[in-house]
Image (cartoon, rainbow, N blue to C red; front, side, top):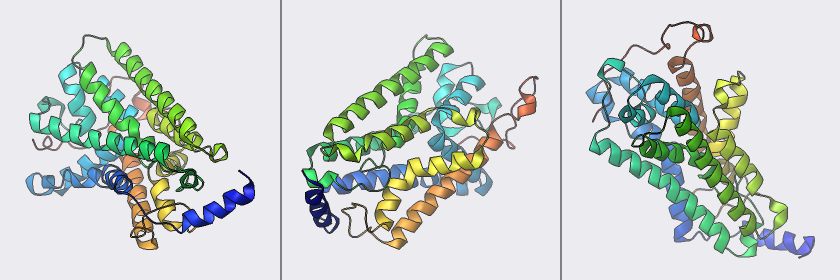
Length: 308
């Protein structure tokens, strides 16, 4: 296909807002998992335990969503009991003396949340692989049509912890196994995206895979450039939808959402989540000067445990 042909088709595609049911299902689940669950799921805590407890909880949720491997390593380091790993990963370590295993309701809640993230990724990839050639010419922002894929490690790590906590593997093997699972899934999805992108020049698998790796690795433990980390987290989590809604040149087949109001709100929520995640990183993780002594990590005043 010549460049002229590609340009003509692109003009047609940009004016086409005919999103299918799968398109809407993918973007709705992406919006819920990326920009809603971190502040909405624990709203009952405001009435049950107070606003301060609620803020501690959403700071942990933002830390977990922005840096899931850091949250997982934190869980492994702060509880010798495997049954507590999932509780710490999903809810944080607010009170070590009152730590309990997750309740059935909490298991159901986290499984539903993780399932939504996986479902959104699968629907986006399915759309990419089954769409016509013209649908792949323009990308919805840096992430392409894969709105949730870079955030997939959050769900993968959580599900791996749920599985690994029921085995007898040592912590180093659990960590190694988790990274192998993440790497295998990332490589498999990257290959699928590569072969499904019908216009090779788009190379949409490159930014999506880079952001997937960035979210999966515990870079916050080795990189001290907080502004750089925040910027990368924002790009990885919300840039696809936000740029698609804000840019006139990006393919975004959702006429009802293609506006400055929605794009700015979505981007702002992503920025707030990144900020709270970085604050949580500073609050919940140890100071540098405690690395070589026996002081416990600097944790905020322990509130009551999250609601059941």
